[in-house]
Image: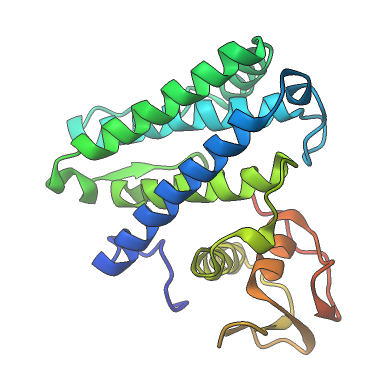
Length: 241
């Protein structure tokens, strides 16, 4: 098991607290980015193919609603998937992104507030309930803040609004690398590399191809195929999600 891995059943208390902190800090950071975008900048390209900045903000708004669905499922026992279907998810993002910038800002703020209120009101016993994430994988409700933190910090860089992987919390990046490599290993897609972080005492993998760099750069490579901050024999990574 990867040290600090956050997707291994009911999370340890210290890990849950870290995930809650990364989620809360991510909400504040990305909200600040969105607030500073001008109306014209919403229509400009994001770092994601075919998505404007408005699409990224719209996705984060609808993702907050989807995670509320999971927490409602955990609290009530009534199955409520994140999205009715992939097509419904995509349509929701597209329609939200088409709204005027002021409406999109208001929608994003309301969705964030709704998720925060739902997390705050969760009964202690409901956090251990099993639900399913967007890929259909069983997870506990306790993993929702971590799921949201990943969306916020990674998509925050996609906004091209001043946030880079180098700005992300190092502890979050370590947990993200653990998470992504755990996902690859579960799919039998682990890159044949040995990854060495130059800023923390961590290595991953045992392959013959050396990859090294600061852990935020490792996270950028694994999640966004950006190897610009790494040294060594760096292969393209598998698709993350």
